[in-house]
Structure formats: C-alpha cells, structure tokens
Image (cartoon, rainbow, N blue to C red; front, side):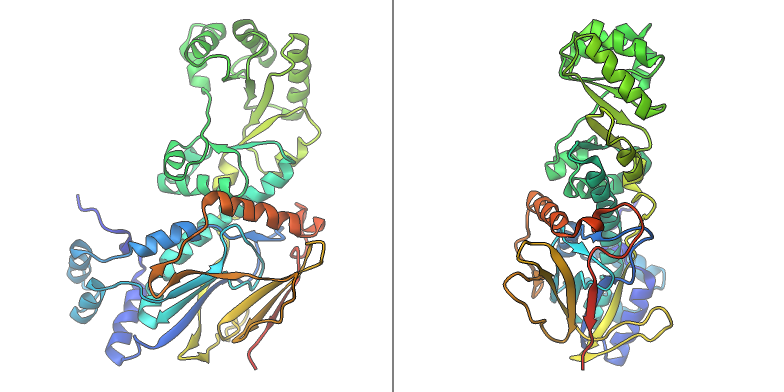
Length: 428
C-alpha cells in the first residue's frame, strides 16, 4: 500500500491552473491572495481564527516526493514541465494574518499569502481545509465556553469525527477555552490536559453496579468520576458513595432531563454527606443546552458531537481569493460573490476602557490608528521561513481577552448583527 505526502491533498484544479500558467508565462507573476468570510454562519456574531499554528508547520513540510510525482505523471494529471516544477517546490513567499485566537467578522482579511501565482495558488486547498475546520470548531467552542459561565468543559468528540480531525478539533476547542480533552493524541501532541471516565459498557461488564464502581475505585482511587446512569440514577449515586465514600471526586450523568436530574442528584449527594462531590453532565451538549443549565447545580460539562461538528456550522465559510497581481488590484464581480481588490490592512478600534467599537479595513494602505487601536495582522512566514509563533497557551489567552473586549451583546447566543461593525475602505 502506497502512502502519499500531505501535498496530494491539493485539488486537481490547482494543478490545472499551474500547468497552464507555466506554459503561458504567468506562473511567476507576483500575487496576493486573501482568506476571508463573506458572512458569518446563521445566528453567529463573531468567528474565531484557529489553525495558523498547525498551518505553518504543514506549509513548512509541503513537498512533492517521488511517489507523488509518479502518481501525477502516471495519471496524466501533469505534464513534464509541471512535474519538474512540483519536484522542486518550496514556498518562498510571505504569509501574514490575524493571530490565532483573534476574533473575525465578515470581510476580515484573516490571512494574506504573497508570492508567485503558482506557489500561492498551490496552497489554496491546504489553507482552506485547515482554517475552515479549526475556525469552525473554535467558534462553536467559544460560544459554549461563554454559555458555561466559568464552569469547565471537557472535549469528548473523538468518536464523532475523522481520527485526524479529532486531534485538530481537540486543539481548537482547548484554544477556545475548554478545560481538557479525552483525546490522548491531542494531549501528547499539544500538551492539552486529558481526562476521562468509564463508559456504560464497563458497568454492564460486571455482575452489578457496585462491583463495577469498586473495580474503578480500586484501580484509580477516589479521585475519579463514576458514571451513575446505567440503571437508576438515584441508586447509582447511592452505590457510588457507598463504594467510594463521601470524598468521591465526581459522578457523571449522560442521559435524561439533565436539569431535573442535576437538582435531584445534588440533593441526594448532599444528604449522603458527599457535599464536595462534583456533578458532570454530558450527552448532546451544545451552547444552548449548556446555557439552559446555567442555574442548575452542574459543575462540569462534557461536549462531543456538537463541538467537533461546529455546532451546526461545520465550516467557517472562509474563501481564498486573488486580490492583487503585480501590485494591481483585481476583483471578482460575480453577483453575491464580489470582492474588494488590493491587499488589505485591518485595525480594531477600542474605547479607552478596552471595549472594541469597530474594525476598519483599508485596501492598499494602512488605516489611521490611535493609542487604543490595534493593528490585527502579524507575520507568520517571511521569505519562506516560519516566524516564531505564539504558543497554544498564549493564543488561548489572546482569545480570552478578545471575548472580554467585545460588547456584551456580541456574546449573545441569539441571532443578531456582528459583535462590532466592519468598514472596508476600497482602494481609490
């Protein structure tokens, strides 16, 4: 079985354009491409940039080896000129963009890729794949974190997505403020705290529930979480405390009317002397379900399917468009898909108190900015070399501060205008 490098995730139409451009002499024209969203998903008031940290590492290793070139030749996808060009491919241009963890809005130029046409267009699929996926997850996860009001959330959606996507999703959710993940690969690769408890299968394996709980406590100690809803939740809690004692760390409820069950469980735990035992709830948690439990005695949430699928918006809707050729702005004029030409620079304006008020985007220039304003783009890659990138923890804090800065209405889960207005000033 052959295994191919990530470079083959390139779409064929990109190679079609490169082959033609190499033949007609336009492949080396200096170009600028930009990534932006025309609109936010329905009901959203902001998006979260996620993925640049993964993306720059993938671009660093983006190469076509012998196996990839042989496949492309054998399938008749490229001619010899294009094959030779691909064999020597290295990205030598510049990439600038919004910091990972930055908020974005319709029209925000969240990534700018500069270089020759051929070397930039070849990266389109890779760039959109990473940013659309990770930004969708982080945008949904940030809404869940806001809805949780400081209560921790565990990312536990690995079984609801592709195995590689699961790792990226765990990273994006942690960036957005999730406390931990059940995905061990994400823990190993990115240093994300991991956590997990047993499933119903473990309880069913044993002769009865007390035997299952005793086995788990014997192996892991009392600093574990017992799943109490395999049979009867009330009896499950009694069995858990009888086995582990009142200093059991937590119980988890994964089904039923969680609002009612959380209240009854707290009362029962307190009556058994387990006043410090936490209640973890899971099972189809999204931002709306989490928000509905804000007044209930829930200590922690577990989110799976909703977070790894973007909670109804599995893509951030980002596009990658050519905006400048040899210093000349170019535009697409298609109905409902028109673009603004020229390389953009963005600034976010703030009140002296730190509250964001608007985003100004200027084509082929730099917006005027005052002491309380912040230029949004930074360098990721310069002349093909990766610039030092923020750590995941730093990006996580960047997002936390960004969410604090937007007006409180922008954090609402209901549909409405973007959290701050965006003004795009076209080139003259």
